[in-house]
Every structure is written in structure tokens, then in C-alpha cells.
Image (cartoon, rainbow, N blue to C red):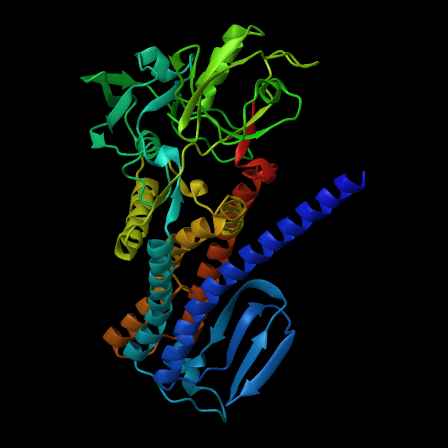
Length: 468
């Protein structure tokens, strides 16, 4: 009992530490963005009222050289208050506290400095990833099919396990799935397809074959994001044992952690799902597994059992759902370009009338925090978090340049209008525009947060293994 309590305390402490890491790195990214505005305003001679880390009532504050530095109580980023970034008209009307007029080009420089600092931080993270490397799972390195849903569209079209997909609707593919640039993945090109049927070009034993597959969109309830187009396939992924339950059939047969199952009864195994189907077909009859253990290949016989209350044969194995892992060292420029290209591809998909990918498929604050959490809990997760931070900073830089008040791009647009028209924007009009767009942005973030919460699997502790 004491041991169980200690394990619970340890897991709770581990989870709290990971959550703290997630909050700190996200806040660091936002604060660096705001520092860009702060330093640019200081260099251009603009008045800075406040520089705040976090929001809400101040836990600490101190005024130095006319700037109030403060730490709020809500850990959700930060802000810098620069009065002269408002309309020229408003800076002239402050009684007894006249502020020098700032040219539109000075305002544009201050607005651009935030995205510039985000981009520079992305490059810093990218250099670290380049040096240290990032873990790459098996689905990110193959287009070979490891499982075909017997009742799915791919099976109906004649696609088989072991087929290697070369192109989807004429778009060459080099990976099954993966983050970063997605245009070369099977999953993205199937989801992004707009025709009723998808043309799949594949290699089968050296022969090039072209098949037409009609994707399906799985049903979801009204509170969840709408599912995307699928054809019922999964990548080839070597079944690797993450853990074994004591006194289970696998434990009694002599299997060990990190053993890789390469064949069952002399039949090559392409994935955990395929192995599961093979074992189901054998029932509780003995089955011979070909096991790769370090540099040795072993043949181990195992007898599955049926646990009380279950119908499927049981081995007592937790499988590593990442498959065989490698380490990649992408160059900093490649990482930044991949992040920018992904944003562009996503915007194009969302704005296409025929695309199944919609605004609801984006991630908001909660979704980003969840992705960070999943990165940190994985083995070598801090490397994944560094790599994810590259993409996030590129997103922050580019999306803040959208010409929407109160984003940086909105400030740039208003300053350009002021420079071209050679007159300030009326204070009342500016306030109305900013209020409307601010409400729209808040509403949009709440909209994404609603779907982010529905996406939570409520089983994050076992995200890196699935029990079979």
C-alpha cells in the first residue's frame, strides 16, 4: 500500500513538474516577442508605460526610469504598453503629458520587431535542434503500409499490407505522417484531397500500380472536431516491446523490454495491429515469434491466454507506439522554412471551399499546451519540445503579421494608412475597429479552446504505449 502511494506521489510530482515546464517555455516564447517591441520602442525614443510578465493584478512591480516593470498573477504571456503606438491624434490630446509625435515608419519598425524577435528565437531553438538532433519515429521515415482495415476503403480498392505508397493524387510522398512540413505526408494529402476519389500510386514488389480509393470521414459527436478524410491504413512500424506484465504469457515465454517482433509463424510482421490480428486468428494456440534482441535473432514460442471478462487473446505486453526511433539533424534554415511552408499550406487548405480542413482543426492555447505536454512526457521529450518551439515561434511571427487589429500586422496596416494619407486616424474610429477585432479574436480563441478540450484523451500517461 505504501509503495502504491509513493508511486502516486511520484507520478503527481512528475506531472506537476512537466506542467511547470510547459508553462515556462510558452511564457518565455511570448515574453521574447514582447521584448522585441520593448527594445525597438526604446531605440526609437518611444515612451514605454509598462512591461509586464503575465497578466492580471501585480504580484510585484517597480518603476525604473519611468517604466513600470511588473509580474502579474495569470501565467499567460505578457505585454508592453506603448502609448504612441495608438493614433497620433490620441497622443496629442493628453493634457499636461504631451508625447512626441512618432512617424508611421517608426511605428511600423516597433510593430515588426516583435515578429523579428520571434523569428530570431526560432533560429536559436533550431540551432539547438540541429546540434542535439530530434527523435524521429518510424511513421516519419516510411510510406510502407503496415495495416489495412479489412472493412475500410483501402481494402476495398485492393491495397495490401507491404505496399509502398509513392504518390497521392499525383503528389509525391516520402513519409506516412509527421509534424513539420506536411505536404510530403500520406495523411495530409489524403485529408487535403478534394475529389470524391483519391488516386493512390504504389509499388508492389517492384511493380508500379495505380488504384482509386474513395475516402471516408468517420463520425464524431457534435461537440468534437469533425474528423478528416481517411482510407483505413496505418504505417509499417516494427512492434517493439515497451513493457511486460509480470507472470503474463510474454513474461513466462522469456520476452524482454525493447525486443522487436519481426515475424509470427514465419510471416513477416509490419505493425502491432497486424500482429494483433495474427494472434487473434491463432486464439490460445502456441505461436512462434521471431524476435530481434540487440544483434541477435531468436525464435520464441508463446501461448496466449484469455483473461476473465475478455474475448481477445492476451500476451501481457505494452507496445511502444513509436516503432524504431532515429535521430534527425535538420539545418536551422530548413526547420524555419518547413514551419513557414506548413502555415501557408494550412491557410490554403482552410480557405479552399472544397477542403475538409476547416478553422476548427486549428489548435488554440490549450491545444498548444497539450502538444507541449505530450512532447515533454515522451522519452527525450525535451528535444521534441525544442523542435516544436521552432515551429511555434515561426507561427507566432507570421500570424502576428496578419493585418488584423490588435495584432502587429494591424498596427502596420494602420500606420501605412496614416503614412499614405498623411493624417492621423480618428481616435473614435480606431477604438471601434480595435474593439470589434479584439472581440472577434477572443471569440475565435474561445472557439478553438472548446474543441481543444474535447480533444483531450484523458490518458496522457500512457500516450507512448498501447496495451495489447
